[in-house]
Image (tube, one colour):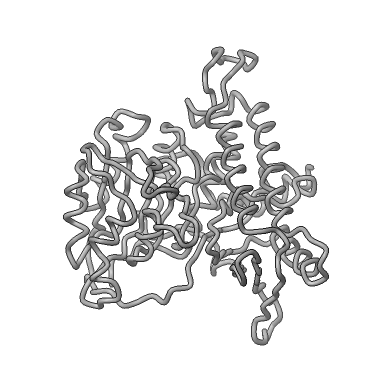
Length: 429
């Protein structure tokens, strides 16, 4: 244990970050030279009930040959894997978000939800560590079930992939799959890690869910002195946590557009050139029935306008692949469950359509996120992203480690990237 702690200090996994948010006058030092090695994983149906997994590992040889893709059919069915992913999200809800105190924890009220009422769980460190250990076991179980089987090829693939995921080297991992699993919440074997926190993929690596579609040219904006951002909000959440500080941060460091009405947002989306660098949503998300058996994800600002994937598609699909149009914002979609994707063949959810229309990346929670923590996370993320010095993947990893080490809070792991691991604020296009 002392040796592990010493290694952590030397490697400085938080890259100089202290506190949430960073304190004035003590900016974080730049990330290490060069991005981490890349691990690409593809997971697709090769028949109605068969999934095949592919992966390409980083090659550490001095003169790497053509990258080798490893391949194996999975023995778990797509439906079983999707149900187990839902179960993992539900376990996070049960153990963290909706956990009610029985009065045993120091300073908590009977019936209170201590993990949802504050971002800093330091006073509940023992309980937080215990819960995190259970979540790590659940995350490992999902990964174990996904790779479990008796086939020879699958056994070799499992050995290869788990070795890469559990290695000491931090990787940039892109999961390309029509099954959008909560990848950062999956874990390697916790018993082989110094602490349960270190088992999670989101604590070990930069992680994104990606797509295979070809990018296209967007209308350039030229050089700008200041980023353009938007705050798309429900006014009833203005007094929650650090919401006002997030508003002020955007106001001071960008050209800010504030929208409280969904109709205004839809009007902006209907124009060909959408010049926002960052879109921040601070509102509620919920599942609604969009068909006989197809629940869809919808958000709502302060008015009664429901905004979902199909309405975004309707407003922008005529501009798709049009080099005279532009839609390349990085989107922080801070609304409950908005990282979840629709099942293949169903109407796409909001985040999926934003990516499909050209968004540079979408960062959103996999679960119902406690509001106080959501504002803390948003402030910390936007404060760093607006510097233009860090990619979204770097920031996501740093915040997971910061909230874990300083606040004993695992909830940053529930934010996941859909594309955008290399997204960085650039004022020239």
